[in-house]
Image 1: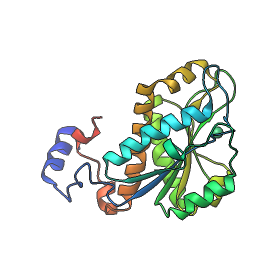
Image 2: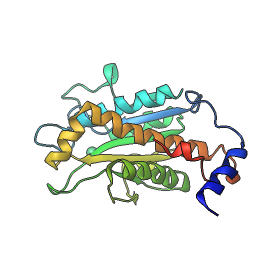
Image 3: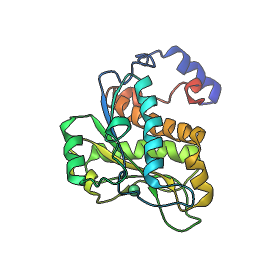
Length: 225
Ligand SMILES: [Zn+2]
């Protein structure tokens, strides 16, 4: 079937219009955990500390979710942030996360490695829900950055003990000078977190929309981003 025939068919099949933007995640609770903080700076770049970048990303991500109607909780930020010399116990952090009974946990970290390593990567520990969430988010990040990094399973304390679907988005390599300066740029933070948000939103919608609809290609105009 030719393209024009496809388009004609699509234009007459109006099935279950999508919920209005701005209401998609109404009633959902998202916990965002900017990794490290306080006494623990995480990985160090030339001009930044991971704990700062994680927090900046988390704040940007929070805005996207709030725009879509979700309730967002951060493990640290503002008055909840850790004083510079305070240590924290990861056990306490995960206990706090689980007490929120949120629908989803998104951990934010920066990766570290060789100076030329680059690209965001999404990790999960267990369960189909977390796997699919990681997959949907990584697909958006691949689209945004062109990275070939794929979803990977990792045994991290917070992911292991989270009682909700949980992922860790390593937003990029703080040890790569070029990527570090991107990660420090608020405009880039805003863009990258938009794609993390989009992937998460898509994952939520999959649970709500009928399989038949998911298997139908979207109308062409919806592919324009
Ligand atoms: Zn980290």
